[in-house]
Image 1 (cartoon, one colour):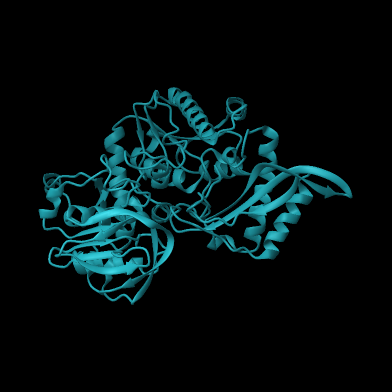
Image 2 (spheres, rainbow, N blue to C red):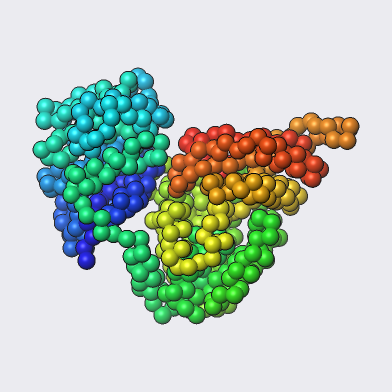
Length: 514
């Protein structure tokens, strides 16, 4: 069966794959393709997919710059409907003969647009819409065959359309949850403009992934990096279905795990019908991080040491492939594409050493977001305790200790993090939160304990709500819960005298501090 498919042209925007997965949420298959894909390459893809339309993603560049990424102009003659978002919006306007220039008033965050014509992607929407903007350039003029569909205070052409050619542009990001009716806008493009049928199901992903793993590994052996989190656990189950006893799951305890993590993983996976190995490497990792303050360097060191441990275990079992649970936010934030910006290095992406003993690295869920991974995990019938675990970074507490990592600071943070977790879960708030944790900052301040002066650390508490981790809002925790957390940490951990609560959204912050 050929699925109705939307091709998303990748111009390096942080939300490119978010567009792709929003399309999939509507039951329409999406494929991320290079921004300069040719009409001939699109035609070749029609052998596998029923290509029904194109979406041009956002990107960090300006369309008028000399080396800015551009699409192949031939796609405008393909007859396929097109939707440009942010940079894609500006690029379509420029190629069509319009004018794009820097704006004197940039728009970042929530903005209100006035809908001038409710047609095409804006069919059925109200006269005013709250949308998510993130741009410094603006479309100021359009050729005659294009119509202005919406404007904002700072963008005279915030949306446009060419009804005859079925080409549309939106300066905002409908794929981001902050755009109030973004779902309806994308639905209009998929169903009304492109005439798609919702014939793709996530269950197909499991079958495809198992086949891909078998094709890559063949009759060889592999080890899977198992941390106990949802990503690595799902990958372990997928790979076990593909390779059986030719797979060995390796859990590396680098000393930066949450309280009780080793016991949890051993109890959960020790019972499964897989080869399971637990490796304690506290000293190895701590020694390598001695004197290191830069968070990027921390991630690179941890990524390298992980691989060295995996290589040693692979030699013992004769494995040639490394399987890991890299998901799309890991890759997009590591700046893995030519025109994307690096936000931070993830230990399992850009943090990997350039030379490894493995014949290949297999990443079955590399194009999925966390909530999609949870759906796959449920279909694989993983325990609920795994499916709904909050995300935890691969480098662990090492990237929640700002500055140099020491054994003492790690233990202080582990205890503080356990208190945060216990109090939030005791209050029954964990179900509505994406992540909740503690950060041990480098900031020290004066306090009073037992009528005596105390000078100690400041712990930051972070709790966020999100759907896919590409955007997030800080959670408005009840004051009584924050008070219990603050009281317990300062009472139970002698070295801590002050607690602060992080009230920053993503963007501009990331969820993790480092």
